[in-house]
Length: 305
Figure (cartoon, rainbow, N blue to C red):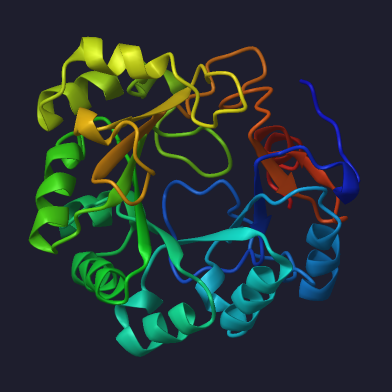
């Protein structure tokens, strides 16, 4: 495994994941950081670290569940003031309250990745996330749309449970009048607590076929997009790629030009036993406020931080 740590001033990652808390208000069957005994991150030290980054990057505010921190709006305001872009990754339960959604939006948070493993189906949520929460999730989606957030959704496909999620996601976005969004589709990652082992997982080709069948795009179209990099300055990635449902959106900004889809293979069937080894795109702020490759750091600290 090619593990290393960088001083913040040497950060070269385009996206940096920051786990502001290990606490959560759900108990999902798939969770890469299921340890709840880790203290919340010291935000002053976090801000000091990202202030040293040599260039602007995407800060992914994540948890377990970041909205359990009552100071999250202040954290968002401070990250905005630092000049970095920010994306909040959340299960959305608190965002079902429109006043809270408005407070976050006013803080400078304008980009949210909403977990929708069950889409609009309580049976799926119960099977994957141990909670019948479809209505709260859908209310969060509605609040994000009404408050003009940039919207991304994330859905883990579990074989035998929610293979029909891609078409239901499209129908749900249409129902809530969401015309610009990124839909993220991935399989189960065998890190931390997880449902399927590698032998039971849907592989990349299977994820592509589900999207092809349910989103009215050809496999040839997907294979062409798989050759293209997610970030222009980096090489194409083996385990993830993005494509627009409408080819006319190809030359327009993502998040502002219709529905885009990202397919990611989080399967760990490789020598390193991690998803996307040696990624130069995704880093993680460590507990010592250095920067390490994300998946490698998670694997090195599995069961701990």
